[in-house]
Length: 214
Image 1 (cartoon, rainbow, N blue to C red):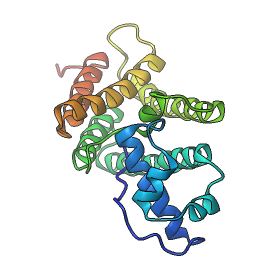
Image 2: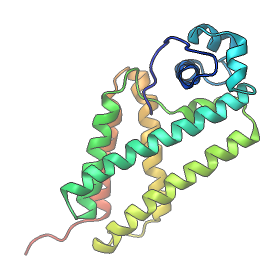
Image 3: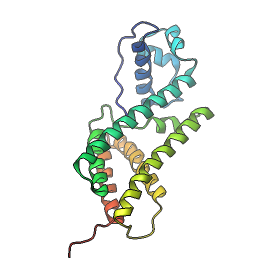
Image 4: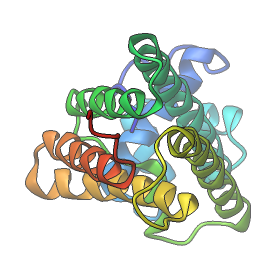
């Protein structure tokens, strides 16, 4: 979901800029080819560095994949929380806040260059070690818990129209985002994610209907 920069200068072998260059180059390649389809040699070529510089920062390809995933989570958490805070400043109504957040999120994804995508999804289409699998599982569940809390606040103010599991609804939101990435790449249209988020917002409004004025 992040927007890594393309190839840049390598910098000094032990510098922070050198490590960021490797991570940025690896991110672009993994999003294009998947983790299994990205070799260390490809990363060396894209980043314009030597093998010694790579192994100065990373013990192995698996270590790179894990650090890339941690950076991805931190960047997305920061971006999502910033968008949520912006939405919260516009209204105290939890349902209106969520709708505003979804609109802002869709606009953010729509500006992605290249097309928006999920690093976790690219990891899933190939073999990866158990440590990385556990990391992805842990953080997907943390995101799920975050959205459950948002839906709980909405449900307290606007009781749902029917029985619904808020954990399932949170997973539905995550599925809409991930599926939106796939469709945006098939259609080569970043606005696809925003469209799906707006539709999800309309669905949530049906699930938690506001009382009609007398």
